[in-house]
Amino acid sequence: MTTPLAPYHEPVLLQQSVDALAIKPGGTYVDVTFGGGGHSRAILARLGPGGVLVAFDRDSDAKRNAPADPRFTLVASDFRWIANHLRFLGKLPVDGLLADLGVSSHQFDTAGRGFSFRFDAPLDMRMNQLARRTAADLLNGSDEQGLADMLRKYGEVAQAGRVARTIVAARNVRPVRTTGELVELLRPLARRGEEHGFLAQVFQALRIAVNEELSALEQLLLASPSVIRPGGRLVVISYHSLEDRLVKNWMKTGSLDGREEKDVYGNSLRPFSPVGNKAVQASAEEVLNNPRARSARMRTAVRQ
Ligand SMILES: C[S@@+](CC[C@H](N)C(=O)[O-])C[C@H]1O[C@@H](n2cnc3c(N)ncnc32)[C@H](O)[C@@H]1O
Image 1: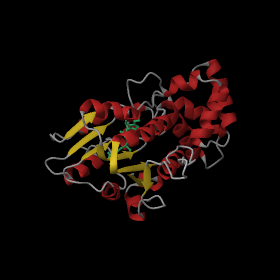
Image 2 (image 1 turned 90 degrees about the vertical axis):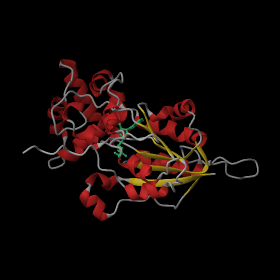
Image 3 (image 1 turned 90 degrees about the horizontal axis):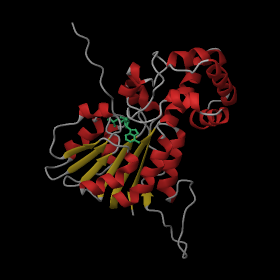
Image 4 (image 1 turned 180 degrees about the horizontal axis):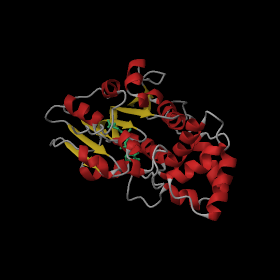
């Protein structure tokens, strides 16, 4: 008997996010985080023959999931360059944009990619396998203060200074090259019983830094007014508070730091108006079936 292949990714908040796009059958949509294509397939199912879907993913593994559908195009690029690509493809403006941020289960569960401390593998963590800098480069090349800041900011690692010091002391003897070496080095720093959570925070911080995830999101948000037509929808699913804060600020105020810009008459200059005040979360049932959905927060806004 053969073991069935693990699914590439189980889409999170699938129904809710595709509903939030308010799809018009003849419209043009963009899924900037294609992954396993679960959201894209649901969007295509709601589009008519004249509809268009452009998807982005910077991981070349995602290509294998591309549906053979004349309405669909996959762009193998970082979504931070969305405006240039859509202009080049002649698809501007679009009626809706969906971003389902973070890593796919495929990336996380593929041992050799180095995203998870469950496996021993080279410290890689690049979503784009052609990107210049791996997690090992970052870990062995950043100064101690830079490492501590990164761990604190992206992973909320409580003992960030101590962890950075430990890494620097170890790499002065020999570079840290694998997930196994990093785990062995850091496990003794965790409080008893909290090893898993502690390592998860460190690995999350490294992943966010290697892939420059927050600056990519910032650039996507800043580009969104020039990409989405008035009345069109911006739908973002995020998985940690730093992402969600940026999305919330942007949708509510039109700035990334949450300071609303106004014209001389006091009218808001924000390009979007949020749909609802609170982020949508997955139901208990969805979380039970897909634990990844636990931290998901979805926000929607309409282009003014
Ligand atoms: C959570 S998964 C998306 C899953 C997808 N919605 C599905 O249903 O299968 C996130 C995907 O976005 C990609 N990604 C993350 N940041 C990206 C960026 N800045 N540019 C392009 N792709 C990105 C990752 O490579 C990953 O495949």
